[in-house]
Image: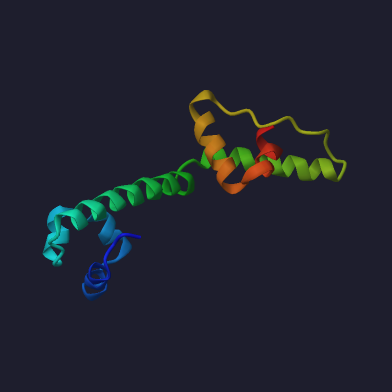
Length: 120
């Protein structure tokens, strides 16, 4: 990336963790010795992108027992069907408010064509 080696050294020297990096601001970056305006702007933009990526993952993992329940119920029914105990299950029915989240969770844990197994 375009981050100078001396800046990377400052992060190491100050033992900056990932969480601390995400919480940092212009003033915080200056406190650890980063002075060049262009470098500060670049770092702030990269931190913003990391926050966005991080929040997407957190949303997928931490939230929505509802979505996981729907996925597990469907997988259980598919297994029972494969053993001849029940007829072919319909695709999961998800309330409108959870539809977008459900699709994100499924696509995260079942990437590519494997998501069709649950989404249809």
